[in-house]
Length: 262
Ligand code: 13P
Image (tube, rainbow, N blue to C red; front, side, top):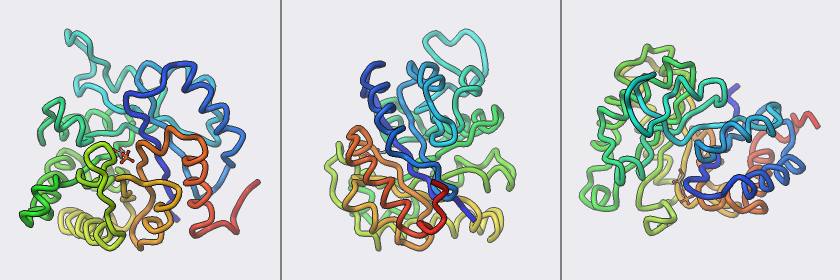
């Protein structure tokens, strides 16, 4: 059984005390749940203090980024090797990194490989711009992003990788149009079919694929009810205690509430 993954991407928000307070409040509300995994991605600066504060039965930490070399003269960078004891996951290939930090397909591939080499599970973000969508290029974009990013991994490593489909036009800070669950399903099914063609149907079935883009406590149920959607990656709403706790509550209820452990 795959665990539903609810991941909070805090982006470049929350200083140390704000993050600590939010985590403290979430601790009180989030349950230990066999089938729902809650992941928090704070700024790199906060990975160490939060890793000490966190109840690891309730939460896992994710990095938002790291550099693909393990060590060396790369001023200002942090490697996956340096954070491997702090995080379980790393968000890689987020559209903001592709757009603002010129991360192309090859950079994303190298980062995915570096994460896996350091025993960190990638949450690989893929998705098309509004222009690409209107031009009918969504499948081509997803194909290129998925195929290149996974190309240095074995089938087993691909199976353990998480992919997040985040259409750029649906991200709150890029316009935040609401994606219909049916649009999300079509893209998720397409991504899974690509993985099946490249690796195997079993790898594709076993891997987790998330949806991200303006997900909040109201819309999350629609996405989690899509067959093939194994969780959500949440930006803006994850900074709000009520909204994020509400999203996790919906995940508890969405399919497996009879298996609560607390
Ligand atoms: P929003 O939920 O704010 O649209 O952000 C989505 C996102 O980019 C998560 O990685």
